Image 1: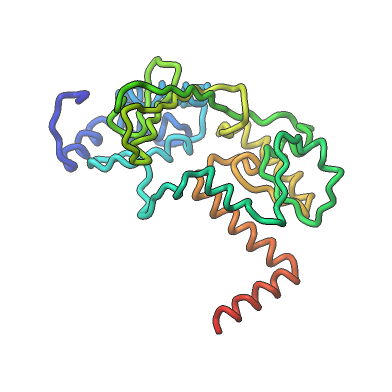
Image 2 (image 1 turned 90 degrees about the horizontal axis):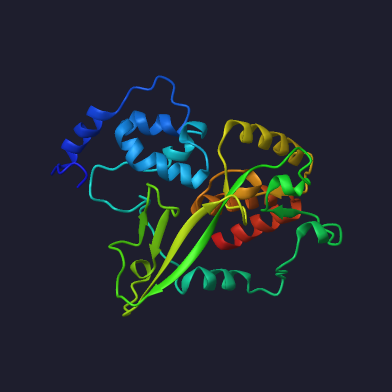
Length: 277
């Protein structure tokens, strides 16, 4: 649509090849895109969105920011290419409610960890909050980006052709989500969410810049002096993980904890042996 061309996959590959630029040392988010699709498409689709999302120019961000964005030459409109993708039955809220529905689990909402950390004895602590906050910001604050959500319900059956539409230009919001495309609901009205990136609010995204990574490494070294504390998740490991990656990290962490606790390891082996029978 942008160029008025009708191209098949092979022709689109040639089109990208004709526009991409050679970058000898790919270090930044800008380098990744320019070396893949060229500067013109970088300016049209990537630079504005990235500036809005992160609050800085792509040439100031790690290459990991745009390396995670797929470039396709076919009509596969999925963001992720995993073989199995599914919405939880009943939604994410219901999924977490069921996961937490156990007599051994106590939930304390609206509670500052720093206010109760000395009141609750523990043998092992799984910490998923910001690692700089855990250490009282003693080395300085790690920057995070947040989002402000604006929810809208319209008296029309459909607003946009797909679930998520990104806006890379001058709009203050980065994307609009229309949920009925995900749930399959049929209704005369439709609900949308506009996302506005901000520095204010709950920390969602670690900002991948070299100086931030250096500061995190110093906090990580502090964490290594706390053998009974396990730092897990986006905020505690200062990594832009997707949900499936965090689940994988959690399972791997549990395996390490289990291995480090003799009675747990023995129980795990007994369970495996029983299962084999």
